[in-house]
Image (cartoon, rainbow, N blue to C red; front, side):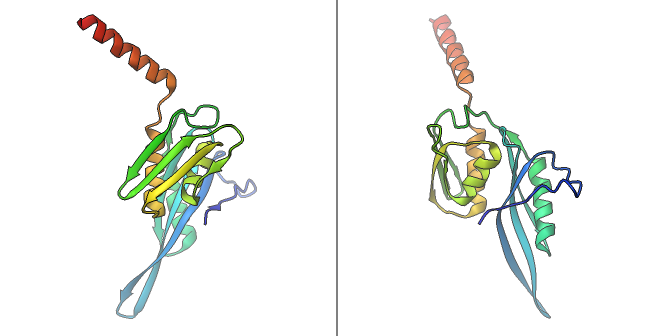
Length: 175
């Protein structure tokens, strides 16, 4: 149930080429003396399709306001991730609370094989080929958080090589 928010250039949208996806909308009710008062929570994922992605949760009495608030928070919380030719450079296994997301690099042309919440994050981040599997809780908030946490732990192969060379030099100097 992921909905894309279209960028309307006629209305002066200042998103700057960002992809904004609505992952989840939840209606909650507060019981008051006169009956029930409804409000809405929206989980929004925002990215530029080139390695920057963030997510936010907005709450309001109306759905459009919740989506707008979530989008503002998501833009503020954007993080940069390192991609390798449209896929991941290595396997990732990320957990958040009781959700576990396993992400595997895929060959070009595979596409994004993922559930709705993970797919939204991958599309916004600019990942084009990936295999994913969710274990445990499939709560969209926890799944999106785990996915972004995993993507943040993604390291560039050059960084890993430099770090290993440095460790090898330190080990040989101490001998």
